[in-house]
Image (cartoon, rainbow, N blue to C red; front, side, top):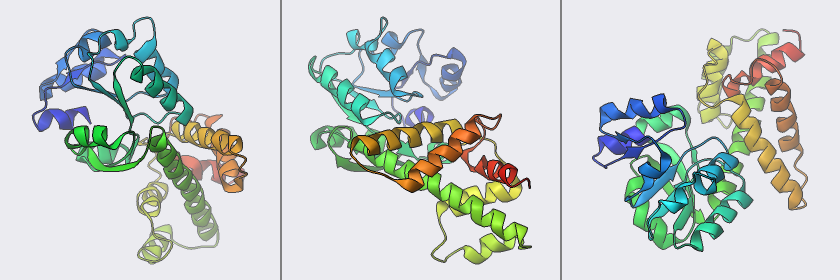
Length: 275
């Protein structure tokens, strides 16, 4: 994502908790800084892409948090997938000191990040979204879905669909394979029908080829499903498919498969059935 911003000519200052990851961007023209505060000083737009809501809050407000270095009128865009209440709390705290905030989580995985075709779901005030739209569009397709926190809600909906769909494809493949169907032929047969989907095409291919090098990891999928289920319960909703999906991915993450691609749920179901 940062590389694409460099490639189209934006001046990018980069920092990462693992310095080696940030240094990779220097060959594309990014200025790699020693501290997060150095990266955000004197810039108009700050993008956070970290693993959790706690990590984002620590970078923003911790002992060495960046808020003291962000100039008045800057926009902070959190593109991580974090809990809705955390996004709203961050926005409220930043608003008090004159800093605008958007939550803009993404879908599309590593492929989408490389190609600039991510789906970007943005929550926040529309004028602020329009102000930064040209930057976001370098990384993907931008949709404003509502106020602060709505980007995270949209991402949770996405992750519920993805997680449950991975389970559905994995179970269908396991059933068909046990009955004697060639999985490559099955995928071809299903393509273009009502059962077709990006999950079938991309993750079905991974299941067939036993290629589980991570794009999106199982532990990240579990984090998102757990967040979605906790929110559902707080809203008085009972969502059985979501609950089962969370249970299956939790079972998977208690094994060595936690850091595999989330499509490796297929392996967990194979082991359950002693295949």
